[in-house]
Length: 330
Image 1: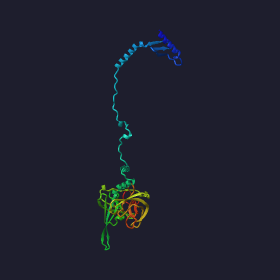
Image 2 (image 1 turned 60 degrees about the vertical axis):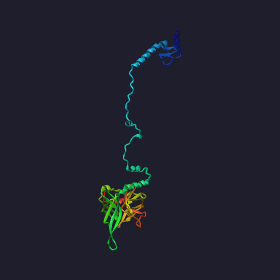
Image 3 (image 1 turned 60 degrees about the horizontal axis):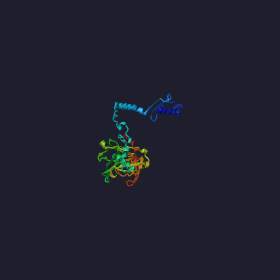
């Protein structure tokens, strides 16, 4: 009784200290004291007091019931391992680890990649590219002519020049003066095989001749035509021919001047002549003049020399003058 009275006094003290004071209304409060659980409500200052000693049997029953419930509960199933899709299937492979499909590169890109680590300069790579692209299009032309000696006897005479393959049908472009008065014309291709050639057309004003040979298509490599009307002084050029019988010799230089004129064998002036400083010698006549893309922009025709050897002033007929008179669908 004395203990209960102390608890009641404790409850009154709580009320006096404002446990139920204020705007917030608490209908009941449970407090834990030294010896038990004290339940206090506004309606009754002492509603219930449970000593801890009296609660031990109750707690034992609650604990045993919890153990029994756990024992009869369903066992927890371990998580089922499910196979995961590959990173490739999920599309989560980092970009740097993905395998890309090979795509055929552009020809120029492939050429640059091929020579990327070869130790060559860009200029050297361009020289090699032009030669490898065009040298098989160059033809070595030899002729057999007959001249009269001082006793009016016929004396055979050989001549030589160069030409360019125009198409797979076997047409060849050269200068008229290379095959002029020739009784026999022989064209030697890049594979070393020679074929008899016949003349199928001439333009004496522009010193142009077209020959025809019967050769397999697989050994004919037509030259690609360019546009000489767009050339500029200082542009890099390449000449390939057969000087002194040295087949497919390449020399390089620049365009020294444009729109020169030269007298032709017909007595008329050839126009749209390109002046170059690339070395030209006997045997270069009729060969291709090329730009850095490996396109034919002219046909080497003459040199300014009193000795017949190169002096640094060569001349070529422009492709813009050749194209209209060559009887081919170029």
